Image (tube, rainbow, N blue to C red; front, side, top):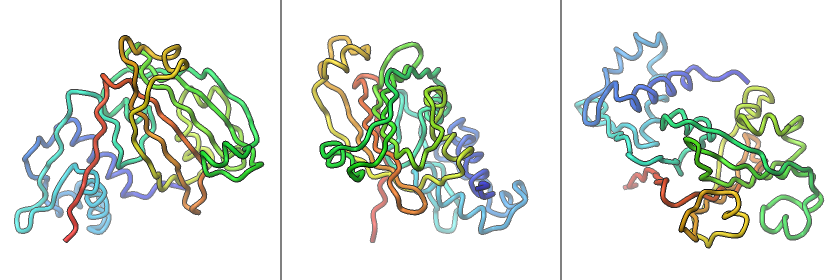
Length: 240
């Protein structure tokens, strides 16, 4: 499925905002200017700007234009409101990523796994454990479970790069929604063996269920993060 033009514009504007082409507090070029620069319709620009506003990068000011409210954070930020791959987060935060696959297997969903993940009993699942390294430090342990029928051909080699890139660009599946919860948990023996935790005995844990454009859950993930390196950010908009 080809990407819509607004997505390319959205990503280009987002990159410029993160690189501070337009610094915090400044106004974006006018809508007419952006239409001319990107050679597209006004609705396409508005759709890209709406996505950026939802993520807390910009805010429309009546009678003035669109103000930049994005501020880079000193600590690595994993967004809760958006759906990003590890590679995309690395590019946004300008760190050097590396992924090591420590487990890759195909398993049937038994009763316990079905209850925990939301997959149906008996479904064939890819079960992965991956250690995520940032600038040479092992800081995240990802447990990923994928519905095998919807992610055919998945391999450890793909898992070391980007599964989302494979899903979107090779399989043509659209990733739409992720439901998540954040908890703080005691470090397990596996956490201590896999991660550079130092004196810490706890982790920040993000658990999520991710759905495609047909509303089918294709992934269950538990990401276990070193607490000293990460700031989880989201954007809230007050509804009137």
